[in-house]
Amino acid sequence: MSAAHSRLTLVACILASSLAFIDGSVTNVALPAIGADLGASPAELQWTINAYLLPLSALLLIGGAAGDHFGRRKLLILGIAIFAIASIACALAADLTLLLAARALQGVGAAILLPNSLATLGHAFTGEARGKAIGTWAGVGAIAGAVGPPLGGWLVDAIGWRAIFYVNVPVAAAAIFLAFRYVEESAEGELPLDLPGAFAATAALGALTWALTLWSSQHALDARVAIGLVAGGIATALFLWIEHRRGARAMMPFAMFGSRAFAGLSLLTFLLYGALGGVLLLLPYVLIEAAGYTALQAGLALLPMPLGMGLASRLMGRLTARVGPRWPLTVGALIVALGFALLVLVNDGAPYWTSVFPGCLVIAIGMSSVAAPLTTAVLASVDDTHSGTASGFNSAIARTGGLIAIAIAGAVISSAGPSLIAAFHGGALVGAGLAAASSITALLTLGGAGAQPQRSRPDGGR
Image (cartoon, rainbow, N blue to C red; front, side, top):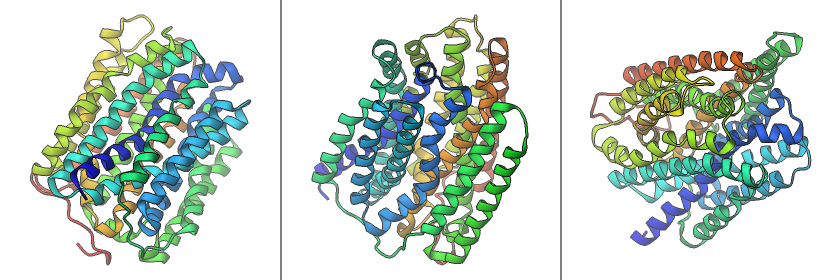
């Protein structure tokens, strides 16, 4: 592949993944406006996010495996097209039911485009160039996420919440054009699709999310919650049984976990991105509902986090290619934990610069040390045959962590006034604990300071 085509491949992958990044950050800022316009309760507002995250979490695995099987370029374009159509449907939704259906379709599109965007980069670049490309991919994606909240806040205040979904359309069109013209097709062609596993994973996540959302919004463990938790547990056990029986044909091959590094990276991702997803949902909501911020002000308040990540991720990608991921991930996650703890300064009377900004800045510094090294380490921990599956699994784990955190976040969203601030402080401290646990996980499961994760072999060896 020529240098020019490699650069345009990188641009196409960045544009594609930015769709998912922008959508997540924009929608968080728009939640109060959506709730007011469509008359949604706090529990229903949670589903505005979860309707997107549920199929995204459940189908990322099969989205990556499908790219490995049918071709990553084909699946990348398909995912972008689905996402664009669903975005238009979100903007045109006349009621909450239609909005939730369109959000779910967005999740399907994102589940296809995200793992194939990353796997395409893994195919197009090698060695230190791969680290630089992934660092750029993570960094520009973070900057896109940074643009999302203030842009979304401005659109919500000036035009209305429906406008936030239209911004996806030109981005999607540009990504499809570049993918058609410049992205090289890549596929392994030997991995069968695992539809039974996908259905079981979807059922498990759906039941657990529904039960946790009910529990957090009602503050009660009733019969419906218990039934949902039991059903989710049974579906999870069924998913694991299916994956074990299918062996190398599974969408989550157990052989990948023959690498201690891959297992550790998966746990780290679940803990850290679960905490981050919960805080990024709650912070703008609390600022608007309890501190009197406008949607634009709440969007600007979040700016240090993704902007800081974007500015440093390319550098961290190069550094990780040289020294390994262990210490960047260990130290970075610990810094994130400190940032979450600083969010207890947030209240309804303190100025932004002394209450919100310190925590956001420290989280940005920590996440800038994590994002690119984590992505690079995941791709390095498995063989090329499973690159799409591994990237899909890691993205699924990140979204699943966020999905569960958002389902539980209803306990905060359903509060009001001073109790909303107090509940947010409790949530921030829980996030700090999860980030600290992810730091310990990196320290204990990854190799020495200069070691790269070992690649797993298809037979499960190391």
